[in-house]
Length: 78
Image 1 (cartoon, rainbow, N blue to C red):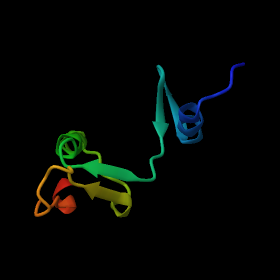
Image 2 (spheres, rainbow, N blue to C red):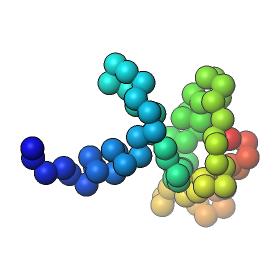
Image 3 (cartoon, rainbow, N blue to C red):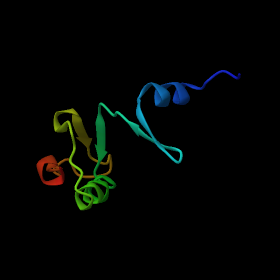
Image 4 (cartoon, rainbow, N blue to C red):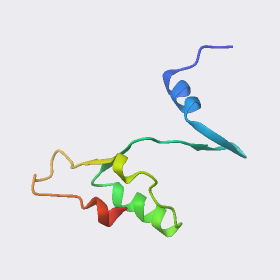
């Protein structure tokens, strides 16, 4: 057996359940949001009726090129 990569180790340590057909349920304990791709991702969750389990573990940052007056309203997203 070949040694596991750090990514493999992290992935395997966060598997909660096997869903079959090469799908697994993983536990994510921190959400790091970015202003560009976050709204579409959370829109997808909303469409599926899935809520963020731990909004208190959700952190966001703005793009380094955006003006510092730009604010993400996390409550509107989640």
